[in-house]
Length: 409
Ligand SMILES: [Zn+2]
Image (tube, rainbow, N blue to C red; front, side, top):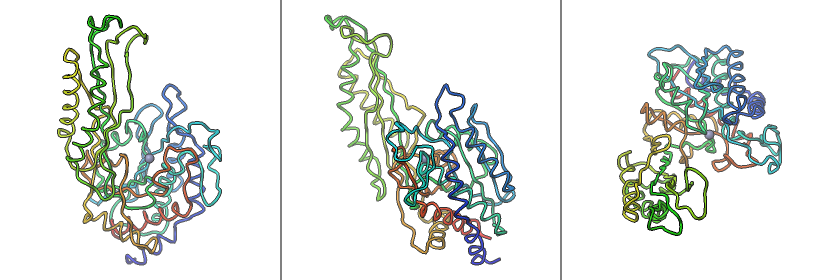
């Protein structure tokens, strides 16, 4: 088959009704990770994905990342020298919050107003289902791809990204040459993602009676000085980072403040320790050392305000730097052509406001990643999360056409 006839055959094999049903099924299997509850994890939804791939006759493997937290990885085509493209999704979802705030119950997967409703409808059971159905369409159409297509349904994206960190160290993970991250980005092609560092700053002083502050060292004095540095940090990081057409500039946001860290909070006790967490968002440019130097500078200013205190910080879950991919990359060119063939429109480019599993793929493996999937960019983690059916079915076709353009036939 020629490229054109392969495209036509594979696009015609995308079954919209099946895709809608699969997305609804995945939404109906809750997969909020709740530590301490052995049933609240990705196990059930991952098993559904595994059975689906087994029924479709895909080679697949289950990677145990942690108890009850498997990755499911399916592939089409033989391993070996061939170019390998990954369609990546995560199986976990964030909490539904207050279920009463939802117009449709959060795990109902209800179909109304041309949308599927529920937690994970956008982020990202729809994107995962679109990847699965795209792979099935390629398989059923009999198109002989010039490389291997892998679909990864990974655990724990919303937490520590344990699933992708595990995946990149496995045999199949090391064989990936490029990845499409199927996160909700309104089917735009996102070549850039903001990075994040959660800087947890711990300040140690000396406990004392509140009536005799001269007898102690108050860590809250240093904490206050550190908060006073936040705007300057933001300004400096904006100078270090490149301006982006698609990403908002760097921000520094205090998110957690705690004191005392031990014992009971009492009005007449100067605490021995205090802690503040800064959510530092980045655009491409600086490396880890440059970001660390800026946080160090703010900590030094805090120390100067309270010289007897010790001020230390560490990144929670390491550094997730901003990523960017050159528009000239073969993956990007394949997706531009894929969007055109799947939708008849020109590709629209965008940027990812947060980090994704793609951040880890890019940082550890250096491979090109493009984030593109169904669902409004701002809807994740909100009540009344939903996905437009039209975007969902379009996404599956974009994945089919992009895979054919990238891998060849
Ligand atoms: Zn997500």
